Image (cartoon, rainbow, N blue to C red; front, side, top):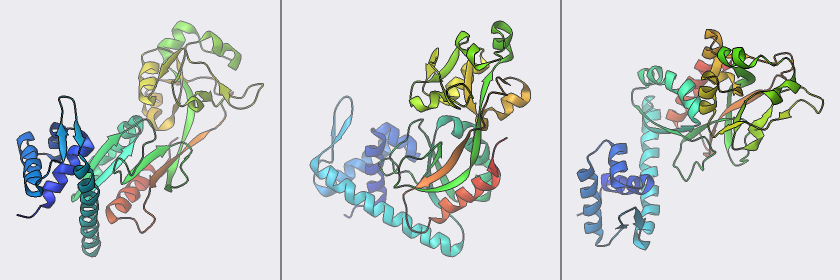
Length: 298
């Protein structure tokens, strides 16, 4: 009996997700169904592919060899589907997108319904990571990155820019006063990132230049967490327009030190590793994003 693509897909997904349960959820199957696929594959190959412990699954040497070939086979099938889709001009297949949680929540998620209506045969798989991840390791088709790109091996497509502003809630300013100079910031609660440290260089004109390195009173790893803290009246934060346009329009967040703020715009790029023509589904996704974003945020 020959190995099937479904069995190879189940095996690769179990490895990628770290468990049979997580693989079943991602594939939209039952845990027992994925487990049976894995057992059938091991039975057909007469070898153990994964060692099951109480805490995790570990690849055997044979499993590692098969995984490399399985990925090649699955990628080849995916590319073949792309070629057929191009000929039909009907983009299809799974599209794996990765971006930081704030960008996912405030930009990508509101556009998903419209994108799926236009391209119903593209199956979106959305992942969030507030740190830069290895696209190849995580099998990501395209990542959306805010800020300067550090990996020169990536191919990038600019999608727009987003301005940084210092913001606080009216409740915080009513309780602690509105700073009227950069020097007054030391009297306030400053909300910043625990990493990378470069995000704690605020766009403020002062005696030492046009970027002020601040020492946060409260640290967070995600821009969305800092936004929620600012909305809750916990202090002043430097946040990007793409996640705060609505807050400012409603008056939930107010810009401070406007005259001292230098206009700094963070670039927003779509990045990918492929150096050949983009798969049709990726190109359609990027075109749709660019159409909706239209260059940036005010």
